[in-house]
Length: 352
Ligand code: UT7
Image (cartoon, rainbow, N blue to C red):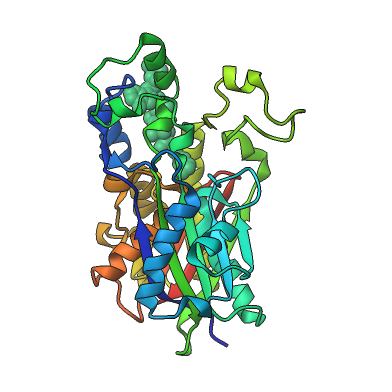
């Protein structure tokens, strides 16, 4: 029995790009700090009122068109986001409604930056058990709502004013986190592979809740009564807290290990993988993983310079770019791997 394969992809990034220099208008930062440490040059942000489900629906439209299917053929949605439109319900049903495919079951998955390998495992299970035939996998994140500034017109260069000292100090307090995230969405249409040996081969997935607070949104959670308080706003807990150095270490140790384990389980050498599609959190993380796995740079592509870290969407956006420009060819072996809040991490192997 074959696993799921990708029959169409799409991506969407909102608005005009915001450069590192643009961010330096509202906080103490610079391209000279951001680019060498992360690889990031620019990112996009959802507009006021534009949500993860809006971005996801746009990426999905493009994936449906690329797959050449009628959207009525989609019989399940697997949706990943950590910036859902509402605290509840999840955004998967909203994507379905925006596409006009109401009634289709939506599975909302919260594995943050590690979502793509988790979503592929879930989609494969749905198809293997006959619960679905054609799945829309949509991964979207709109982080603009947790950015630590309000002077968006200054960020976009629409107003020349210098922001208040207080506003600048507030944004600067969160600069390590704020500069790395950007908004965007990627989507895939999945069906059972027709060719033996093609499609999803397997995934190796891990979660360790001991590290949940390495990156977490501490405000607005049900540990508190009421779950949202004025104090949370005063303490700026609507901006996630991130232990950047700890995450960096988790990523550079756990990701090479999980890729090696997955390849060994499927009796393939790491160097037999044609494309290593890594979550785009930091170029330095991916370069360290690449060196640990002894792989040439061209096998581990990067687009973080243009998008920043779009959380759940990074791998889906990268995949769409490489499929559309003809780099990824049918029959090639792909390994998709990621680590993110949870802590979740994992890898998936797929013959495209
Ligand atoms: O995808 C979700 C999971 N997230 C990740 O995987 C993130 C992994 N971590 C990282 O990529 C890195 O830790 C960061 C890029 C986020 C931060 O780099 P770092 O080298 O770990 O910096 P740091 O937070 O330890 O800060 C070093 C210095 C500090 O100044 P002092 O205390 O040494 O004077 C920071 O205040 O750099 C300062 N700093 C900044 N300066 C200018 C932190 N952020 C900035 C900034 N601009 N944006």
